[in-house]
Image (cartoon, rainbow, N blue to C red):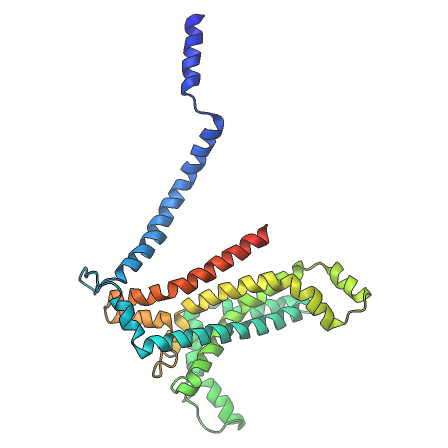
Length: 305
């Protein structure tokens, strides 16, 4: 009996507590995902920051040159054009997406016949591949044979042919219109989901209190959808600032840098095989994008709480 008791004591001494074993099992399940994130996200991210401080080109390792890439970019007019154009593109396009998405969401939220079909139709721009969508817009903007010029000239609204993408006065506006057409369904779906989550009892109580339609909109609807609108705005701003297809396929940053944005500027650095300079362009965007990501994350966590 003494021997058996001694054996049981030895086994219990080396047996891990149940709570600790559960933690080890949980870490073992998460470890593959963590390693995958480190390999696919963290390593390329840190390596890009390192490359931005070198004079690396295609075919060479490059030497550490400090902030020379950043100083060179800050001294070029193209860089400052990219900053201004990116700000204009994000602010104007997101404002228009908000206005269109909110208006359509309020319309579809009403009990109208055929609203399911209309809702599906509005999702077509978002469902279409971006490459195809912006190539279609490029054809529509063509000065000769383009659909927009044909409508304007044939109807007599504007008899002269306009080179929408080839002149500075209309290039950015044309890119914004195409970007809004492509992106407003995301706003529409997000705001519509928020509208459906607003309790009907609040609207009924406001009606009983004598509030008109505008008063109900500002006191009931807006507070109910505001968190979703803010999160959608942050996410849309990040996507628009990082988007490449809409500018590259329509104007390639021209004419004369009128539509040059950060992703296209970084791509030009890759085309000229100056990897360090292209990485520096991306690193310049990191602080703003990091602030937007942290802001969106904090809002989503606050909403969950």
